[in-house]
Amino acid sequence: MAFGGHTDALAARYRQIIALDYVILLVLPFIALAGILSVRSATMELEDTGPLDGIAMFIGRVTMLLIALIVIVMMYEVILRYVFERPTLWANEMSLWLAGFVFILAGFYAMQQRSHIRIYLLYDIMPRGLQKVCDTVSTLLIVVFAFFLVYGGFGEAKAKLLRWETFGTAFDPPIPATLKPLVLTVVTLVALQAILNLIKDWNLEPEIHTAADDIDQDEIERLKKSLGDV
Image 1 (cartoon, rainbow, N blue to C red):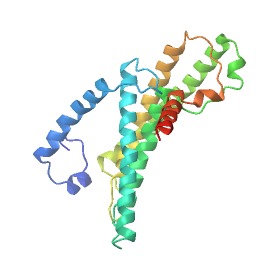
Image 2: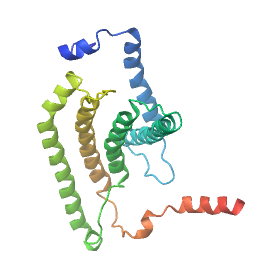
Image 3: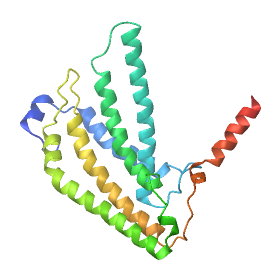
Image 4: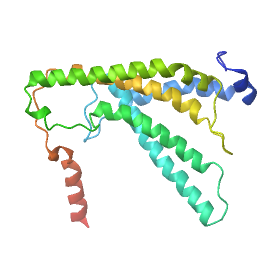
């Protein structure tokens, strides 16, 4: 609304913009930039090697906090509903809204960390040249999917955002208005991350994947030490 990109329905719902709105609009990019520049890889994560990787890891941290926030909201609702018999009108939709953000944003982080589901049964027995062909084809499919999803869904996502379409419940959060554009944005980031992954992994030596790859040895050692202290 501050830049004129709104419909009459949105303007009628939010009739005025206060100074705090402008402050938030100006501060949020700096907070995001500080988070991207300061984020560091944990022991079980891949190293941060590029600007888009930093964005993915920062979004991963935000997603982790959203999961904790969902738990807090649900616990709050349970206590009010079953202890005080005064359930809220907003907890269910708020949990759904936050879960939508988690589900969408986690895909970008998973692509950056290569933690999405992959089947290596045939891939591991291929020569490296054929593995590169498979990697290229899979990346191309991701890019094509992202292109057509954005191409086909941009108009609808824009319309939902500009009219600030809500959920139609008592709490009435703008779930469609926020999640529809977010899907297109994150799918685009996933496609870009897939291309960067292909470039970074192009000259790597072949790897043999086993079930042991999913085991975090550092975490096991920490658990052993904690149990030993007990």
